[in-house]
Structure formats: structure tokens, C-alpha cells
Length: 118
Image 1 (cartoon, rainbow, N blue to C red):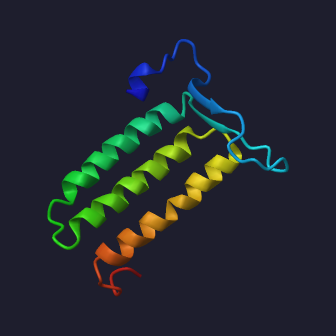
Image 2 (cartoon, helix red, strand yellow):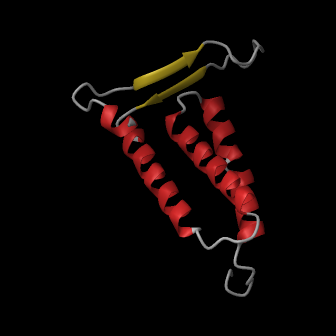
């Protein structure tokens, strides 16, 4: 929906979600600012397609299925947050938040063959 709703003729940042101060610390001066521009709109679309492909590719998961899909959805949320964040602190938070679900997915559902991982 984000890719379809983005008007390429207008360009610039569209679909902006803004909250002035989400951290009550004056030294940070960070605002909650999300939006889509011409570069992030296709990346949001590709992230959605890749998330759907990852969900279909993991039908054979038998061990802790609910936890697996929870981590997968958290990872996709963090990646989407990276692509739509327009504030540097928010971008950094989303970017670092990707590491937690990625680590859990690799550790718990990785191949377990360290010889092939080198």
C-alpha cells in the first residue's frame, strides 16, 4: 500500500507521521518522524515481499513455531522502521533493534553446521 500510495510525480517525502517530542530530554531534541521518499518506497515493497517469502519458506519449522514467527515479524518490523525513519536517532534505534531478532533466528533455527558457516 505504501508503494502504490506514493505519488512519483510529486516526489519528496510523503505519508509523514510526526510526533514532536517522544523523548522528554532537551539534549536529544529527537522527534518521532516517519515518512516515505522515492528511495524508501520500493525498499518497503521489497521488504514486504521478502517477509512473505520468508514466511512461506519456513513452513517446515517444527521447533517453537510461534517463537520463530514472532522473531521473524519483529525483524521485518525493524527493517521497515529503518526504511521509513526520517530521524537519525530513530533510524539508529531501528537499525540496532534488527540485531536482536536476527541473532535469535540464527542461534535458535540456524543450520547448526559451523563448518559450512565459515
